[in-house]
Length: 313
Image (tube, rainbow, N blue to C red):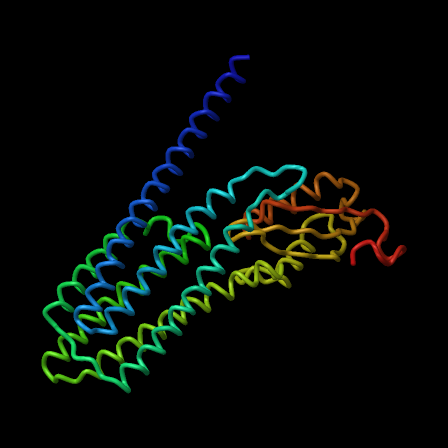
């Protein structure tokens, strides 16, 4: 009885620790959202006043950060919904949908910046460096601060990866805007501002396509990029008691959880009669080598699928 009470106490402390960490992460996200919204507004107004398209581009990129973070925060909260009879996986894939929408919104902002660059090239606008430089410095400081807040969680989910990439490229674009201001001051070439804005668009497109690719891989139930299906097939086949493997499927429902299902023909000569032991050994290997904790393994003592022909299609 005492042991059960101790387990319950330890479980309670672990749950409290998880809740505390999640609450702290949520608070950091809210702070970053508020901070970046202020920066986006300041840069947009500064861009209008100074005439700098690079600054307006940076404001657009910052605004996309705000959308990404808001939607990411909402996506993470919705994704935590527990499984039920209607949604047996819960709503874990919602965060992937949000990341995809964020990436597409980034591309839309990029197209708008290209349109503005063409307009500015045809109808040049004078640029006021006294407004452009201080606002760009504020944007740089804000992006660096936001990155520090999220750096620990940047690899945790696809949403956090998307949000951190937004901030990273915003930091780079803020540096580029400041560089453009210096070149403008020295040479007076307004085209430098347009060139920097197009470089920012290229960075936006690069980060967007990366997130779109990862999101589509999950939606289309592709094997996660870091896992070699042939290698997994060989590793399962090498487990004691396994004769052969077929019907192997590896997929993920979000950016962190990988699922696997397969049919295993047991080898009686190699101890295949212990089907529970085979399942335990295969699961242990998959978790240790690949981090796969969600499995469905059908162990066959006779070639069921080969007889029926349709059970694992």
